[in-house]
Length: 89
Image (cartoon, rainbow, N blue to C red; front, side):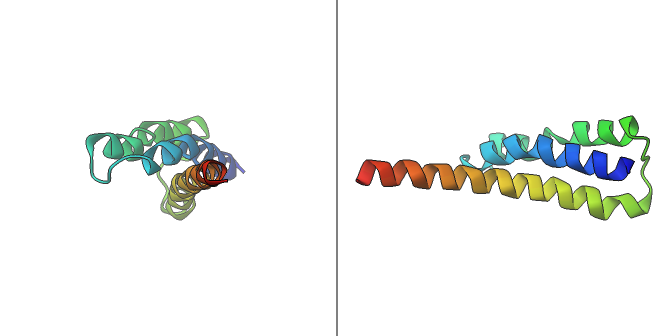
């Protein structure tokens, strides 16, 4: 159960970073920060939820990390698409 809580926290923390990352120029300093700033939090979640660094936790935690990044970017794209359609009408 702790693995699911840690994965959920990882996912939720990465949503705003993915949202921010989508608006940045790829491979810029801010883009790298948007990807790497949540990593210390993910490590903290491993300690808070007493997961350690067991091999079986990696697929779940990595998937939740990248899913949060991707979904945050997806929300940003959807928001910008709505704003553009309002200006066209």
